[in-house]
Image 1 (cartoon, rainbow, N blue to C red):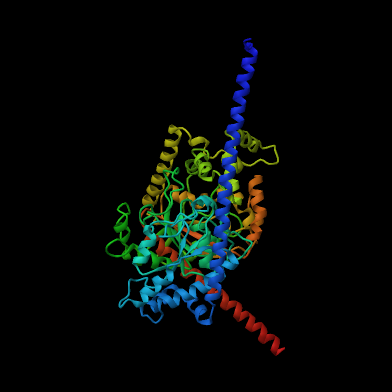
Image 2: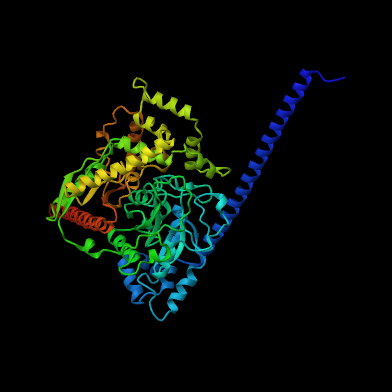
Length: 602
């Protein structure tokens, strides 16, 4: 008896459904196995890491001599190493003792470099100095390859896959005599303005533990601010050097692409083909930043170019840095896409006033082109694939808090983004927000080849427009905010990731930008910020009071390949701020003394 057509169809459909179920189940089992393998790797790494930390705590007590060494300025420390008043191993021992205690409190180090002590001993045994950084301990950001060490970028799949050779930035430092001694923590995929990942956990702000350390070089910012390293390397694709420096009141510089080699940094953001990651440093002050930058770029043969032919062989320009030639500065205090809060605008104005007291500076207002349009192009290029490559990177990985937000955004269907964006555009609704609409539509306008080309060309046009205007008006540098507010609570910081437009802007335009401290948040002006009845800005306004007492930096932007001029102004601003702070401190001391005398005489 032949099966009826209906029965054949049922059997066929049933077979297909069974095959789908089996395929789906197999995929789930594979996913479960992969995830368990990754979780096992994380547990193993965490155990090994804690064992290393416990061993170093016992073997490296923090003596008064060690404390004294770690409190030396970079310039004095280098002088003592160059004269061999201090030995390389002696200084390294002191910084390991300090750093292990810093990371116990703030969780900024992923691991210590096993071969660092041998490297320091080898330097001590040399008859002559190895170079200008002889014996200087330096913390290295996780994403910089180091021979025999993992570069995880927060992903468990990268554990136990040590790099075969040093990245160019690390090798240049070693050639100059430095001793890389630890690696610093980063957020997953390096794609966050906070620092957390499932392997090494959350890094906290060294000035206020509840506040964000910034990202993605948050570990580097934290260790320098806490005194666990004289300086640290970092990298920057959207503000990853400048934001942690701003959140800790430190100094950093994002160079023009190619000025410093980035060879040996993981290419986890290969889909962002128009904006390149650049390496750099976080230092305690601007003078130290200038000193390390001058040493690394060199005055003769370029070490950068020796190891990386694609690096621009441009040596340090001492004339540009040391010149007393009068400069004209353009300034801005806020960006309309996310207005600056509290004391941030007034801090820029104080920096402006300070420069105006010096005869060699003229400061004029400089309007920045439409930041809503700029944001669409810059963030659009980052999200042009609507997060598809990002999802591949996160596939099967345990997620951190920041990673969960990224994956959630990338997984949102385009129709849902558009629907939600529309709902935020309706002014009569209580959650109306022009900024949330922009955030939800990120990438949608840069998907096709034509749209992508338009975004790229738009950035080129804006860059040309800004440089042309600077040349026409004889403006040498620009001065503005680093972010619309200082560091806020770590738990809410990532909600305001779009505020990175203040730094990301200059990556998109590929112009050098450095930051230096010039004030702190008092909280007195927060209520004066106009939130434009925007629910997102209202939410930010509620978060900013947590930043009271924390530092505010200003940002200096230069023309391409004029890093020395940027550094010159950073140093001038730092000197001016320190002088003002000292004068204020003296006034307070004199006032307190007069009050005390008055009470005594009465």
